[in-house]
Image (cartoon, rainbow, N blue to C red; front, top):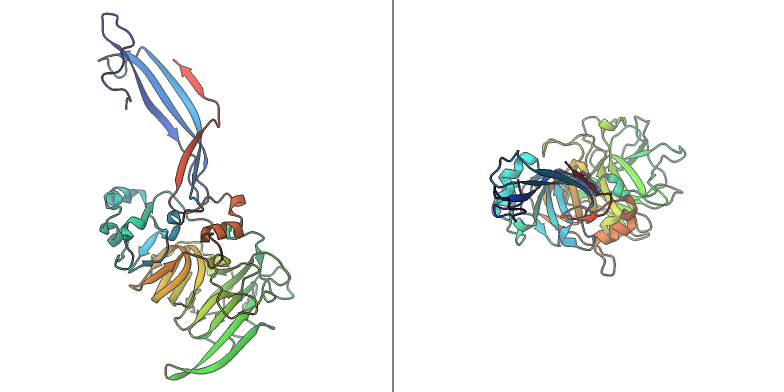
Amino acid sequence: MALASNNSINMREDGISKIETFYRLRGYSSPGTSGSSDSGEAKFIIEGIVRRKGASPNSYLARSRLERSLYIQSWVDISRSDDWAILAADHFELGPIQLNSPGQIVWHTSENMVSQIAGQCKTANLVQRLGGSARNTRNLAARIWPVVNQKQPPTTIFKTTGVKDSVPGRTGEIRIWRIDDEYLSPPGCTWRVACQRGSNDNTYSRPSGIERLENWQHIDGRWQFTATIRLREEDICKGQTGDCHVYLDRLNLKHSKLLIENDSRPVVLHLLGAAQGHSNNSGDQTAAMSIGANALVCGVDANSTTCNRRPERLIISTEATAAPDRCSTQHHRLNLAGNSLPAAWILMRQGTVALQADTQLQGMIWTHSFCSNNHRLSLNASTQTAGSSTLTQQAANLWDWGSKGFSGYGRRITRGIRGTGLDQFQRF
């Protein structure tokens, strides 16, 4: 489409008709889109045309082309909590969500949906489309940010040294945990809430030296086995420094507590499944994390039993290789209720986060499917660290996002910087 109007400046009067100039955009190539960075070189081509007024569009007296490169930079400001994704998913059953801090609900939608939702932004129709209710969050519609052709960040943003928890005495073999207070009969580890196996083993064993307190309690009219398990710094990733990565094929707690020391180093929990080729002898039991309303999983400081509420230091992820079927898939699923997970940063690109009851969480949730089951999620993206730093600033410093090229996740700012390449001018 020509950029000049019909009253374009007359370049010459020769008694026949006006000679005018026109300009149009002939082409543009973007730097592409990825999950961690949307920066790179873009190119655009401007065509200039000289022709007589009223002449055929294909008739011209002269034509030229200018090709120019720009460096396109796209990022989310680390200090602007309003722009960050506090909750993000491809599939939403949002429910009566309650957002207690700044941040966006990022919805990954498809290009064929753009025309349908373009007129619904910042309206109640968009909230309804995501299965939500705005009664608990003021101006909820304005905080839903649909995006296309974008990906969630990779799990590598939560990895620096990347130390893996290994089986004691078997260096290099990953230790896989099974923490379950409901089914207490895996071969080799009966009547234990916390069990372990090597990645090459089919049966579990009892971990030695783990601090635990186990007893029977009369709950809901019957005696039930409960435990308080403490994973100290010397218990996991023993003898190593830096971020500790712990692998589980099942976590199922109804009335027990799991305390993880993470004050001197952050801990990442990885939920495994059969798709990764790790053998599993749990029968029909699902590879999921379920934390009941009367249970607790949290990060603590050394020698403390109080949750430290530092979500950037307790990360939950999944190793799934395929996206779930919305809310019906039971594997690679995190089930939450009440205040059972007080503070964590959840990144489950191919997983599901589901609510079993009204739930409170301090942190962020980035997942494929979010399923409220009509329960309320009260979400607060903040940190307990003293000072004015935001949660994202704390995470960026802790996980060294600057060196990873991770430019943030949420509502992006995009700018073009001229001068990354030579202009090319052609006249023909």
